[in-house]
Amino acid sequence: MTDERDARAEVDPIRDALAAVVDRHRSNHAGAVATYIPELADVDTDGFGASVVSVHGRVHSAGDADRPFTIQSVSKPFVYALTISDLGLDEVHRHVGFEPSGEPFNAISLDPDTGRPDNPLINAGAIVTSALIDGPTVRDRFERVRSFLSACAGRELHVDDDVFESETATGDRNRALAYLANSSGVLRQSVGDATEVYFRQCSLVVTTEDLAVMGATLANGGVNPLTKRRVMSERPAMLALSIMATCGMYDHSGEWMARVGLPAKSGVGGGIVAVQPAQFGVGVYSPRLDSWGNSVRGAAVLQTLSEDFDLHVFDHPDESRSPVVSWTTEDDVTSGVLRGEFDLISAETVIDRMLAAAADGNRRIELDVTGVTRARTVATELLRVIGRHLADRGVDVVLDGDLG
Ligand code: GLN
Image (tube, rainbow, N blue to C red; front, side, top):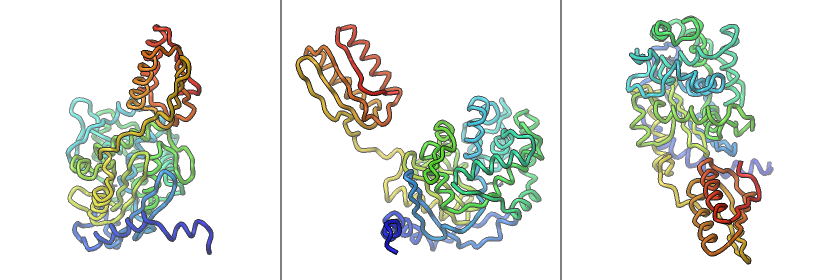
C-alpha cells in the first residue's frame, strides 16, 4: 500500500527516538510490582511501552504500547478536572487542598486546621474528589467518570472487574481514609459510595497510547487532539497540569520537577502520564515500581527523553520572534502589522515602536492585528493603557481586527 498515511508511518523519527530510549532502559529490572492489590501482582513484569501524542493528534509508539493495564492513580488529575468543570475551583477547594503532602500516596493525612486532604492526587484527596461527582446513583456517578476519562482518551474505557474486586476486597486503608475525611466534613458521599466510584475509576483499563492521548488533551487546553472534541475548558486542564506539576509523583514530586520538568502523574499499575503544555502528552508503562510507587522504567524513560531532547518546561526558550511583520510610516500615519501570539514581550516591542512613532510627530497609528493568533490579557491591557496615553496627546490608535 502506498497511501500517504502508510508512507508517513514508515518514516517516523519520533517513534524511532522513543524506541531507542525504551531499548536503553529495557535491562533495568529494579523495583517490584505492587502486591497490596493482589490482582496487580498477576502481570507480566517485563511489559514495557511508551507513546507520544502531539497536539496535532499524531501518535508515535514503541514497545508494548497496546498492552492493557489499569490506570490507577493516573485517573486522579482527570477526575479533579471534571469536578472543577462541574463545581468551579472554589467549591472543590473547600474539600481538597493544593499542597504537596510530602508523604506517601496512601498516608493518613488531613490538614489539622481545615480537615481537608492536602491535594487531590494522594488517595485521601482523590477519594474526596471522586465523591464530588454528582448523580442520582453510584452507577450514574461512576458512569460520568468513565465517560469523561473515555472522552479524554478518545475511546470507550472499561473496568477490569478482577482488579476492581481485588481493590474492594483489600481496600480497608482507603476506606479508613474516607471515614476520616467524612468525620472532618469534606466527604460529600457515603464512605461506601465514594470508595466504590474511586475503586472503579482506578480499575479502568488503558494502554500507553490512551495515556498519551489523555495527556495530549491536557496539553491541548482540553480539546482531544484525535477526536477534536472539547472535553473540558482550558481552565480545568490548566489546573490539572498545575497539580500534576506540584504533586503528581507523590513525595518524589520536587525532585521530579527539577530533573524531568514535565507535569506528570503515576499509578501503581505501572503507568505514568507526562505532559509538555501546548506540545504533547507521553504515556509510559512498566509495572515494577520504586519506593514512591512510581514505575522505575517509566520514570527513567521520561527522564532520558527530557534530558536528551531538552523537554524541561523551564528550559530557557529562544528569544521570542518579533510579533511585528512590518512597520511603515507615510505622511503622519504609522501602520504596523502584527502576527502570532501577542504576549507581554510582544506588547513591550510594539509599545516602544508606538512611542517612537508618536515622538516623531505621527498623529495616527494603525495596527493590523488580523494575524494575531492569541492575545494574552496582559498584552491587550498594556495596549489599552498606551492607547489612552497617546490619545491624551492627540495621537489616534486604530486597530484593524479584534484582540478579544
Ligand atoms: N487504587 C490504588 C490505591 O488506592 C491507587 C494508588 C496509586 O495508583 N498510587 O491504592
